[in-house]
Length: 239
Image (tube, rainbow, N blue to C red; front, side, top):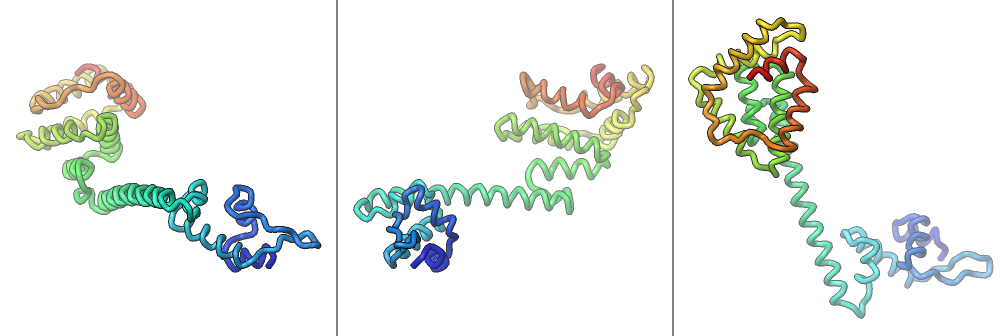
């Protein structure tokens, strides 16, 4: 049979066939007098075995070893590696699925999202934090958790401290004062916002939260300076 017929029977393309010849997975058959390659049923069987191994996840570089009948131990090792890789990918996919579900829940109802993301979104929603400020707060939390190796304790401590306030609405009113501070606000307005924030921040119980250091501190400072206007930054600097 010619190459097109072999490819059709095996469910591959002629281009794939040529590639298998190039990398040595499928021996090149002799050519007929008119120059065409002529394949046998033996070639079809080998091609089907190659295709089957590729479909179950064996990499092309390992197919040769897996096909070698005289090396059953080597073939088993290849399949063990493939299974371990599949297990790892399934674990990553399960994690991705949970993150997608959490993000979907957050967009549908912020209080329904999982973990610190959901808890932070619930606080933002409950106290009417403006979208831009909520985004900055969430992005800061994301940086803190990521650069802490996935440790969410700092964010959890901050949320617990907010939850322990006697007058949480006033606390967020002070934050909204910072959010509403215009870029050209005068010195008195900046000082008033800073004083109000200082008063409420002093009521937070943050004994278990350590100030960010090193690269994390630099990145958080950079993020604030990219998102906040000069008057807002000045008010924060006064703290």
